[in-house]
Length: 211
Ligand code: B16
Ligand code: MG
Image (tube, rainbow, N blue to C red):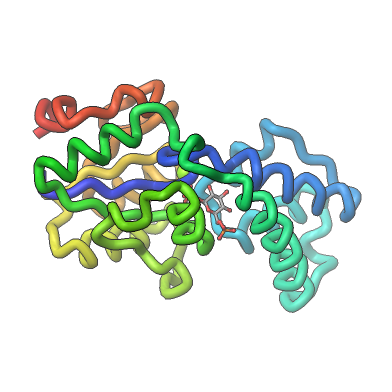
């Protein structure tokens, strides 16, 4: 094992609450009811696809032209960008700071394979942007999760093979993407090749056992 590929939202930090807040306000404006349970379906799903799922949920998908969908998605993102100004290093999920340090100390390469176009800004706010050897620029990726493309790009960027990497994900779409990419998965609160209940359980010792 030479590398670890991390999802961002739900693995490094919990930005799902801010995505939910911004989507909920948008859905309210559109007269569509969404709740926290529905929000689970949006985890790991791209911005545009998330909006399409919300519109479909409200039986409104047919009523919007692509340009209007784009405009609404941008509007949500503006609110989301304001909300993530609240993110600080204190928002790292349990155990992540020490896990990153351990990996670095052992020369393990690290990448971010997030569906979020805001990933670099969030990593900067968390103070860990420089810790990663590669961050996938999702604007260059055509097919989001559950397609393997984001994770294939991550291992290409790190210069490692799929069987030399381990992926950490919290969403079903992300686990599916890792599986399709041929990368061993650790699921956080979701079933992976190894399943954990919390990021606090992530240690270098655990990775050694998976090897
Ligand atoms: P953005 P991940 C995903 O992050 C989120 O889970 C998902 O809810 C969001 O829609 C997606 O990023 C796109 O985010 O609107 O910031 O580009 O879990 O893949 O790190
Ligand atoms: Mg996630």
